[in-house]
Length: 459
Image (cartoon, rainbow, N blue to C red):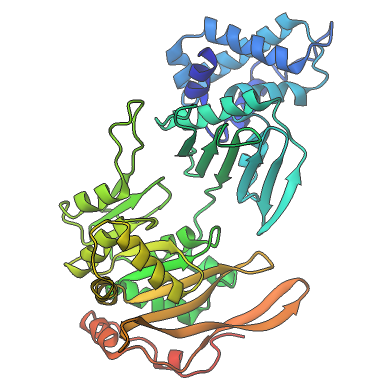
């Protein structure tokens, strides 16, 4: 119980650096200790328990924000280490103890590393990371499954959520917004699992162009579509960059509009002055009080939004989102998991059925055709780069009842060189449909004609 309390009070990303800085200003670096060599696990356990016993709870809560309290806490840790009479061998080993006490243990350096985009802990002794789209196994280890569980409880408890044997799955986030998913045994067969999607520095639209995710002409077109209040769905697989791209598109929403964002775990970083952010809530210990995305979408409609932005559609909320798009909330944005624009439409159909309204298939498809204007397909290529693979328009229904989806722009593969995938978005020769150009003209926006004339947009 004490461990859980300590973890909950002191959880937070990037804290070990602050602790190290404070340690070096508090009477110099931690001295090398002499005497018997103690097991690190025992040292950490004893120091943790002694610190909890002698430090007021309000000091534990304030150590991150109050430099004086932080320095005092570091001095107390130093004193406790000296009292252990353990040969820690180096300053680095002492810092590991501080990381374990104040941060996230052995994965704290990975959290602080800006080059790491995802951390995957498959049990206490297998830590994988993603850098530049590629996975690699790391040397760091947790002491045991209990050590990993404590870190998970620290992360989850810091945002007011819980994880235990009765509820062994949890979604949470770090203070910097990084998304966290945790699994405990017995659902996790090989021990606790922890996955952290790093929330790095927000990329600007210009930086996406510089990285080759899309070309300037396509960016100008999508910006015009957002300003003209077209409804846009960003589709892609896991880790393809959907949320990053949604953030990018949101920058083109005019500042005078009221935006309501709805997410499972808050990741979006809208910069407009009039933004209302809503986040789901899991059930409490008694299984009561859950707030779902669908609950939030319905309530958002009563909040006078100009636009609704859903971080990701996963279920029955798709029906409410489509209805919102059809009833005065044009210009709304969302993401979903799908492999291509055609699959995105089919997935929308399935998600609407999950709402349990027993609508006929044709009625669902008519809702999709009336609501969704554009689908932007995002993908992660073999070399780890993330690209816009297609921009498609939703036109209407075929005679046999299926939804017509036409690619306006499509990624053209041009081979590989030096391990990099070569290629570019190219026009398909299909022009933007007249109803969409008319809606854009109503907002004083006119897409570039040469964009759709069939020549590659970039080399």
